Amino acid sequence: MTIPEELLEEIRDAATERGISAYVTEAVQQKRDRDLLIELSDWLEEEYGPVTDEELAAAYAELEEIDAEHERRRARRSDEAA
Image (cartoon, rainbow, N blue to C red):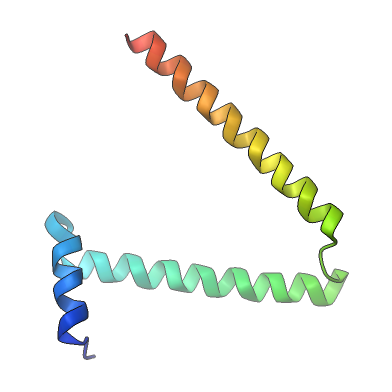
C-alpha cells in the first residue's frame, strides 16, 4: 500500500501519540462503517420507499431534543463538579 507523501505528513501530524497505524485503522473502520450505513440506507429505501420531508423533519427535531438533553446533563455535571 502506498500513501502519497503529502497525505502521510498530514497523518503523522494528526496521529501524534496514537501512531500512524492506529490512525489509519480508525479511518478505515470509519469508512467501512459509513459504507455499511449506506448499504443499509439503500436497502431500507428499496424496501420501504424514500424518506418523506415530514419524516426527515421529525427525525431532525428528535435529534435536536436529544442534543439538548445531553447539553443539560453536561451542564448539570459541570455544576455538580464545581
